[in-house]
Image (cartoon, rainbow, N blue to C red):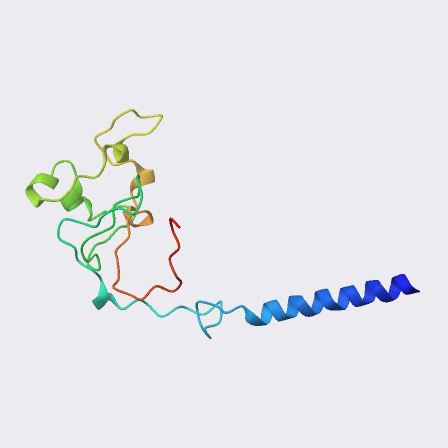
Length: 140
């Protein structure tokens, strides 16, 4: 009997502390429902940086230092290559897409951008002049 009372009390305390912890969790989305579409970012705050941004860590994909709202990347078209292709980058005064984007283990070197590297903004992102959602403790 004593054991049953202790186990019941422990279970009640555990359930109570779990509910207390859940009550303190706050979503970064605010009151927006999880399945609701988020508000799109304010594109007027896109940061433009002549010469590019400094990388935060070695091997970080370079950040996009210009607006990209008029760029298009589809299955057939990648407008990033107008400036960043091996043929155009010097004329456009833009960095060339890395040589690693033209090679993989099956193809040591090709003239065409590898399909796995086609969607540039999977890795390369623009910067917004925005207040951080959470404190950055990277590198502490």
